[in-house]
Length: 309
Image (cartoon, rainbow, N blue to C red; front, top):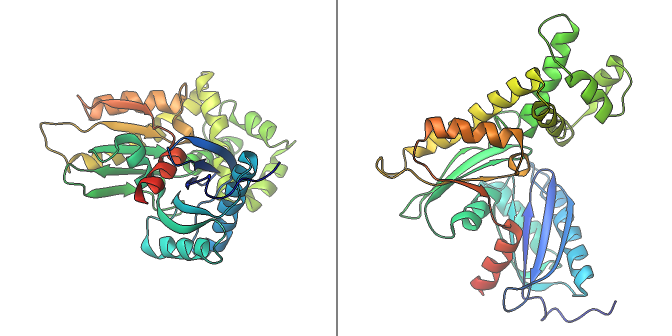
């Protein structure tokens, strides 16, 4: 395919999460020109270069699919793990040198990007559950507040790693005759293509957080199928996620409940966690408008980058 000039793509938007990275290119009118997905591009401390490589590779695939050459004039990257200044600065530097992605690069936290996608510049709370979990609120005066999002060792309660880790613990206890893991043991062994408990022990000693988080999908499927152990885990996860939104409620006027938008791979339509969370939020935040899927964050990032020019 013959590449067009980089003038065709006026901006690139990136949504880099713990499990998946999405890149979108737009033209001068904001219309989408190309899109691609890649592996997780979240930033772990000291690993900005690795995240930058994933982001650049995904952007190149999107550009190649559209026949467009990089670098583009501008890029906006919303990345998990960049809510802290040091990681944000490190990723920005890694993407600017060498100048392969775009001539101008801006990085923001992934949940900050979700706020833009869900509410533009207006007030509201975004509650996200993917590999990790976090909630961010923007108040009427534009101030941004956060809860959660502290990583798998310190929190991320209700997220994918949290659910996967608890499923493994439940399976382990049930093997020792403590409690009931329902169908979870068989499901986890099946999804991992393992044949025995010893195989699972070996797998668990080597598994990284994204691999453990991937087990959450099986937990949600089991809950949807009526497995009582999985449903208990999902209820617990919903309670943890709802607590993040409740923690941010105090930043809004008592008489005006803020809208709450759901985002992240675990809260898609039909998810057992989404259903349980909606019920819990209805109890804890009566009167708050609950919005479904946040509009396309990567496309939002591209259009924000375009508008900044």
